[in-house]
Image 1 (spheres, rainbow over the protein chains, first blue to last red):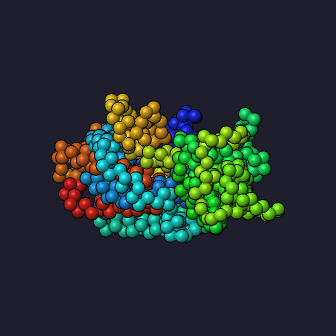
Image 2: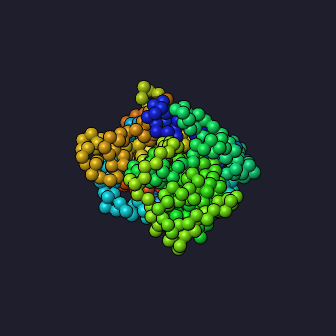
Image 3: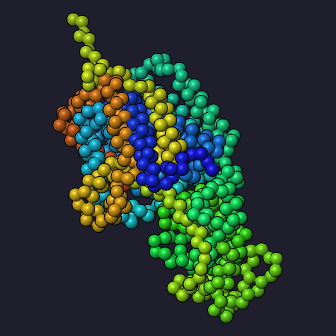
Length: 425
Length: 184
């Protein structure tokens, strides 16, 4: 298990009230540094847009690249699980339109929501008026967004999308490119300040060169180390399960061998019928087998396509979403499970005995489905079908009220703070 | 006649004003705060989200029925949900205290209006309110402001956050020319 982020912060905060205090302390230093950098002064912020002094750009990009190199370096070292770090989801057009509106508000008001807080805290009257305006604007948004609710929620939604995904480059390379871009911008900003702001660059501290060098070195180290592979993440992984009323933490292969994550078909049926839960069924078999028979609602996804699905699965509401992987027996499904848990997808289970077992349980009444087992075969569909009817068999969609089967429940909903726990909540 | 030396400005309790931190140092420190936030808690920094929840809490106290009929507010404060039960709220409160403490020890806490030299106080305050309204509306549409999206999302290399960041600067620079008399 990675050390960071700390486990209590992955759970609903009210379970550990001290976590609020930690956020309060983080906020304190946030406000302290903003004020110390001059962000409480609207004139200083507005000067950015007249090239006289580019403090905003320097502080902002300085902060972004510092945090970025430390973040991805920690991930490369294996002490931070980046999949658990909240990455704002991409809603491209709402972001673009909202960003342009924000830019307009920035130059008119001279502050942004974060900086206006420290401006108001240091009794700048314009800062106080900006905060009041911001509260009014937020209220106005809540009252009007219903008018374009669908656009706001669905237009150009790409989920958890990073620049690495966009440019198909390794993480370390993107980190280095962003550092180099920032350093170039800093250089350009200093030139602008010299020309428009009449600033003497000789008085600038020499240490800034060391800072720049440190950023480049850490970025290079991140490239050399590389981000941890799925296999490396899996090797470090432990899971906490409840066994006989006691919570125990086990190495992940032991969780498999003790069959703590293989759920009986009846438990799956029961879960699918629970209106409070959302069950994602991932069928990792061949297309041919899937076309012959699959559980209604199951999505076919090859093992090789599974990694592409991970960003989506990381953003589901873990308080109510169960992911169940299935193959003909358990072999391929278990491989899929290993991949998903290594990448920190919450609440993943394996259909016990796979589709063969599902049909053995729910397909008894269907005369058309004939068992054709081959001894010793692995992950083979052990039935023959009159036609490739997919999910149009009765056994593909059993009525949960007709089946009363005893099983040992395996599903323990791991409640993580959902995506709404992000900066946008 | 010799120029009258400018009186050093003072803050609350007569503490003399000190200069601001060097922007690169400020950036590095802010980056470390942001990194520690991600490392410990998985969340970055934010301002508009916390303010949003304060507003929702106010509405929940005054007109709870209205919350339950509005999908956007329902997610924050519907039914028995406490809109203040979120990480962004203590971050906002902490930021206010931190900003005050930094201003206090550096002699910068004093009532004043920062504005361009040619602008009346009334106009500046009106524009501050208007700018705050516009910015916050845009920030909620973009699901985060300069802190939550540009800073925190930028550091995690979120594609949408980078697009948004460019748009903030584009919007501001596009309008800056027409606002030059206001600020200079």
